[in-house]
Length: 357
Image (cartoon, rainbow, N blue to C red; front, side, top):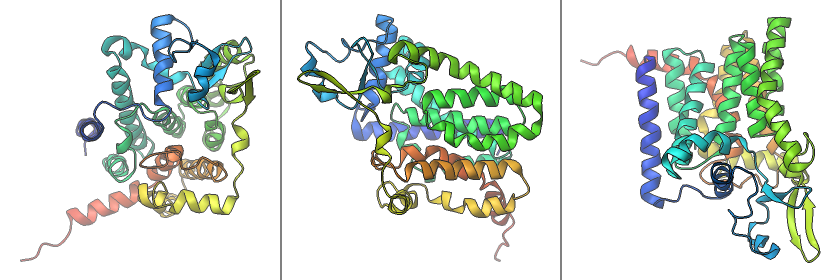
């Protein structure tokens, strides 16, 4: 498959996926925590700030009860975003041009970027492109095209970071890694295996990667200091609950408290959001790794995929997704990229199969 045909196929498939779910849900592409990302983008565009009080329609503190778990409070008592600000910031141009549907268009572009990133990481060959398409249609990604998903953004940044590192493009690998952490703080763990690719490339590539990561990280650290009181404090540290005396702050990290074994079984074999039900091709990654066992990038991708799974084995909200585990999108992308040799073999068998008669 040529690159132009691949891009056309991805655009068509993501568009059809969005149209299918639009027919089922009407105009509701903002489920779950999506409205809070949308309200953040609206606040940036129309108010020029990150105070969500008017977006949430707050007249008194008690009005926030229905939003508990979805907002944070600054040290000055201002209601601010709990979630990452990167997706809303990236969405502002299309929001300004197309209104709320600009958020949906942003989401479609992220889905395209994720699929293209898998093809890039897998080698940017015809087989790699078929692999990316196969992964898209057999995973839960297509179900998230009609959405406004920070998980698509985080996964796309991670897979592009790995793809650039494979090609020793240190600056871009670092930039995408920094943006991935801005999008999802836990991405830092998934990105650790990049050291296998970056460090052997030499001190100059390593330096470029570090400097590139700062481009993505410094704005996040500045915003953290402004919103939450410190560069390394996030909205998840200032998750607030309404009490009679004021706000009670909670943090999100204590929710990683489940037993490892049962948690892993849930992530892999749950009938609703487990990998077996929503991303079955992922289970072939060990074979793909074996076929490419002399390639450093393959080991890095496999370790990154496993790191993503292991991080969420203990998460008590592991099933807070619809149609597939959004927390494991990076695992699906990194593990799926390893399947290109298998897809190449399958294509060869299909095109050279003996004809009867």
